Image 1 (tube, rainbow, N blue to C red):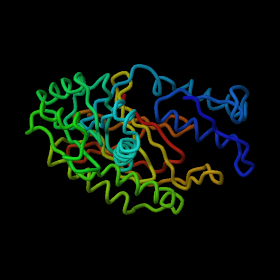
Image 2: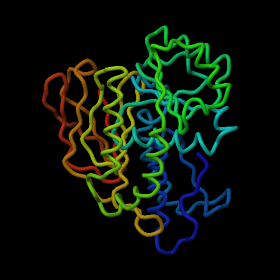
Image 3: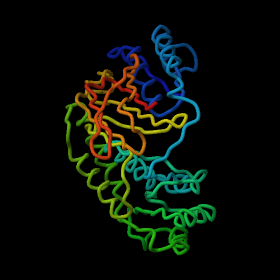
Length: 323
């Protein structure tokens, strides 16, 4: 990922900016890049870069390589809609992703390239305005596999583009629903206004999380499934679940206390509860790797249909995986 960690701001240390950027890139599953300020060469701090890159290399099998998403919840990214209706689509798409991150859902981004391969239970199509013939065929294929489709619109369905309304006629009406107005767009507006305040005040609960949880709970009426991963954590901590070499991995990214241009070191989040369904693991052991730290093995206890681990503290971020 080509991005820049530091642009000369004297109020923050370049090394701290690099740490935060590289962590977010690891969380997203991308390669890290380092260049001095906003040029294409050099480094903001070669000593720090060497230190972080050596740590990444030590644990790279858990960050990079063949990776799979197996989430029951999918969120659709529509290039056609983005190209022609960017102002409507992008806030709705980002709002849905933020809701899933803030409520610590196991989810995956679905694109036209892998649409017909989605093996989940529910696919959200946020503010989609255009669907191509191959996309419609893929959606029909998903419905045949009992995947429920949730379309959200920021306007009433009769105001939607003709292309979109025509596409719906090809689908099984019993296997999709249209919701208006789009909750994703509304949540994006809420997050844009309030997320930084929540993070910087170190609040553990908020209207944001309440809104997102209410929406996610509502999804049960469309298709019920047992979450593979459950995490009790504040909205300021994001979770990503993925399968690396067939083994469940969980990435955690902590934004608590972060303030752009002023503070780039997260405040610790303590006493987290992580649960993984026994369908995935029978072991009470899980590997825990704090960012720039060493691997520890945590021991959990069975809690009904789940194995539960108590995580004493997350600093900037952490990675966990099952053997």
